Length: 139
Image 1 (cartoon, one colour):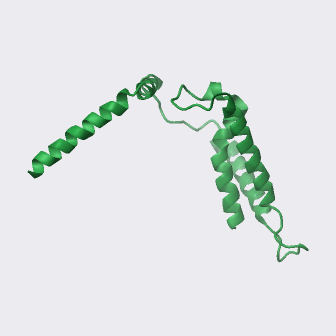
Image 2: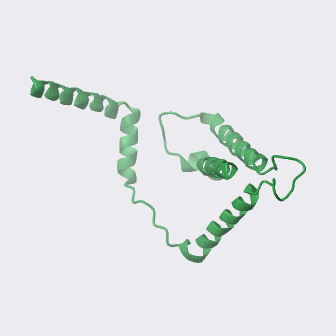
Image 3: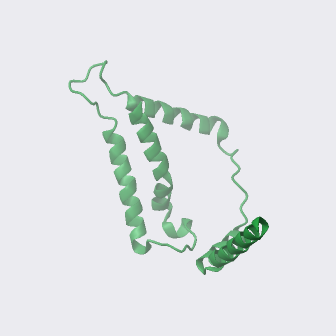
């Protein structure tokens, strides 16, 4: 079942990149300090393609000829779990999910402040003040 763990871990980590490829980076990602620019979509598409390729490779049998004893049952486990989760989504969870409440104005304000270095400098000043206070209390 190590193969199944690898497949599920890789696939869960690549889902955000697949969303960026599908919907477009400019529609999903906000303004940020570090950006891959025109290479971002290519990097995301390459990563998604690589993981899909590896997921297929991990489903191959490890020994030839294949028998019922040495067959790699990972593909059956993956299909079973994906079918179960998809069925659960459509029968009971679709339309019921309520995501976190996000104050986009505050989030954007803090992101822009961090990009301008205001939050970083403020954090250093606060750390220095708290360190001085600790030193004074010990003395």
